[in-house]
Image (cartoon, rainbow, N blue to C red):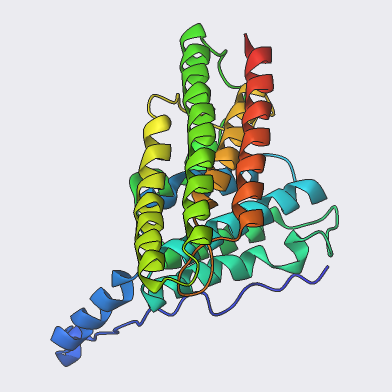
Amino acid sequence: MTKTRMSGLVFLPLAVCLPLAGCSTGPESQASEETAGQYTLDPDTYRQDIQTVEAVLYQKAQPAASDLERISGAMFQLGSKALAQEEHPLRKEKARLIMTLASRGDLRGTEVTPEHDLERLRQEWETLRETAFQGSDWERTPRARFDQTGMSDAVTAGEIHACNFVLDRLASLIEQGHWEVVALMTDFASSGDSPAEDVINLRSWQSWASDWEKRIQAALTGLPARPARHDASDYWRVHESLDRAVAELLMVPVGSGERNVPEPFQWERRFARAETALAESREHLARCD
């Protein structure tokens, strides 16, 4: 396998000063540093997506082909979400960096060998994460968070109960959201050739889409913390499947073109995948009881 480190991920300007020569960082250098970090992404916005990547990336064992594909898929989902949500071109460029790493051949299973260098992949992810995201306490030390021995603690009845509440709320949100999208899309179809009606319907859709993520986050209120490391337990898989469900739901309003309205097959498929992932979470949670 070709072990080529990613290049060009870091473009941060360095101001080298020589105190003995009387050099100091002037206003222009300070402004350049501020600009360099001004358009990095807010990690809190993408916390679940980042943690999904790192849960597999920081496992103890060398990754199998299926693990690498999961890392690639999680990174691609993260990059796609950022590309859809961010408006500034420089922030979109950060999203494209993520998608570039996700598209690497050795993550797609085309160059996988038993000697795959997990440490190299971690370093490339950490370099990318430092370049693309602002710093945060929870995001800065993934190795410490995942460098643990033994299995995770037993799941409590309270955690199971809280997870069930979240799953129920998400199931209700899927049902309600699906009905709402059908109604909105029906309005689009019935507007015909009336530009005025089309504008009204588009504004209604944009209003719904802007509120959708807030409703998803509200449904997740009270969700217990995921296990500290990937231990292949059913409880860890509850969170893994739940992450996939949430990722699909967040993508429901995402379309293309100036109107950014998804095609029917897109939002239908996203709702269906979210339902499937939610059902998997329930199955794993039932085995935790």
